[in-house]
Every structure is written in C-alpha cells, then in structure tokens.
Image (cartoon, rainbow, N blue to C red; front, side):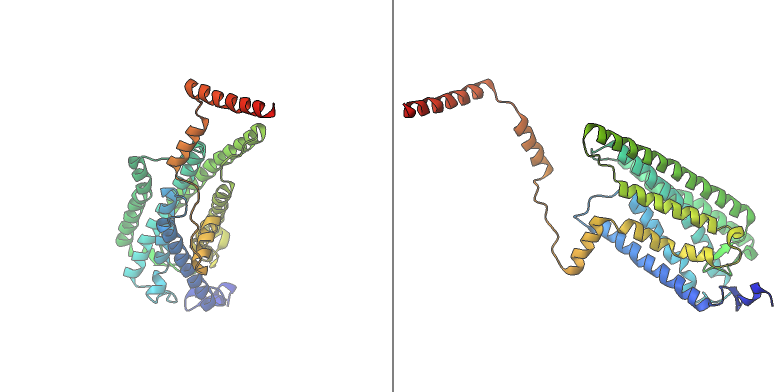
Length: 332
C-alpha cells in the first residue's frame, strides 16, 4: 500500500484523522459565520460607531454569504461522502465560483476607497449616490457571468462537477476555467498591492509633514496594517490553492475554512467595536458625548474669532478707562 492510499478514508483523502479534520472545518466555518454576522449587524445598527465605508459593509456581506455556500455539504449530510448527488454538487459549485468572483473585486474596491478617503483629508468623505451604487453593484455584476459560465459547463459536462476528495466542497474540473480564475485572482491581488503601496506612500508623506510642521496627521495606520495583513493572507491562500504546492492534501481547504474567521478577527478587533461589545456584555450604558453638536461648535468658533466692531471697541475702551479713573481717585 502506498503512502497516498494510507491517507484514504472511504474514498476521501482527508489525512489519517478525517473526522477531526471535518470537525475542525465545521468549527472554523461556523465561528466565522457567526462572527461576520455579528460584525455586520453591529456596524449597521450601532448609533455610536463612526460611519464605515459602504464598500467595507459590502465586502463583509459577501464574505458572510460565502460561509453557507462552503457549509452546503455539512448541511446536507454529504461531508463524508466521496460521491455527492449531482444536484447538490452543481449547486455548491455554481454558488462557490460566483462568491469567489465577487469577493476579490469587493476587496479591491475597499482598498481603493480607503486610499481615496485618506487622500481626501480631514474633511468628511462624501460619495454620490450614483457612484456608491456602482461600487456596490460591481462585485455582483462580476459574479453573475462566472456563475452562469460554471452552470453552463456543469450542465453540459456533468462529469466535470465532482467533490474535492481533499476538501469540503465541490468544484468544476475544467482546466480552461481554472486557469482563467487563477490569472484573474492574481491580477486582483496585484492591483491590491499597488493601491496599498500608494496608501503606504501617502501615510509616509503625511508623517513627514506632521514632523516638519508640528501637527498630528489623521491617517489611520491600524487600518492600513489590517488591509496589508489580509492581502498577505490572500497571497498565502493563493499559493496553497495551487495543486503543485500542496498536492492532494487538505491544506488548501483548511486554509480556505479559516478565511471567514480571519476576516472577522481583522476587522472586528478595532478598539471602538471591542469597547462597544464590552459595554453590551457588561451591561454598561453607552457613553453619551459631551461635546456640543457640530453646528453649535462652528457657531462658537465663529463667535470666538470674530473681531469687535469699532463702536463696541470704543465702548469697551471707555469702560476700562472709567474703571482705572475710579481706582486712581480711591488711591488719592
């Protein structure tokens, strides 16, 4: 018996402990699903958190929608079956390729909007309704052709739709579409690296200017680091998705199962979100800001710097002279 055959379990190649591997995948995916849902609801319904970019919400939503797609074989009880019914396998294959096609454009648009928001400066970054609608719809418009193409190929060639023996999902065994997907993913990752490089250069210029002129720049270094960490994670995932790098092992699928939880940990560990959750868990009331509204602050600022009119200045001068004259009389 060869080494590869010793890792087979009822036709699957999940290593010497297949039940443990399956339980690990299930735990990671469920934890990521619950975490992303909690993060999404917190950002949407919280009244104390600062507003987030709509493209970030869209990216988190697409990441959340990908978790039930990966869990289809768990939900249907087919996770330990090497031969999955054709209808179930085709459904998961189409949905998985569509979600993957929407995921990378959503992440790229989020990176671009982060740069544009940072380059805009301290003023509120406003996006027109038309532009916002286009940005939010682009990932889904990109996913539809991919989903339809996979559906057509899967119906025309049913033998190409099969269960990944070393994974927790079904896929389409088509070399042309696989090569096109890999090239497109590499292009998206390259563009993300380019825009992150621009973001780092912007932060470095702001930092030098702040040291030179003695002011505090408002560019969020923590957010840049989060995006860089996630892009690095995507590069590793892209490498592990290569058959030549991993062979017929569950490494790539295990890495894919960690992706939803990784997104949750990266974007949910911001200080204001953790503080809000801590208050909710401990039952403490949310702090009410004591600063006046923006309109009142602008009025106060305008009043404080407004110069005195000539008449008011003369009246105040007479008042001061009268006070000094009375003080001289009393001393005499």
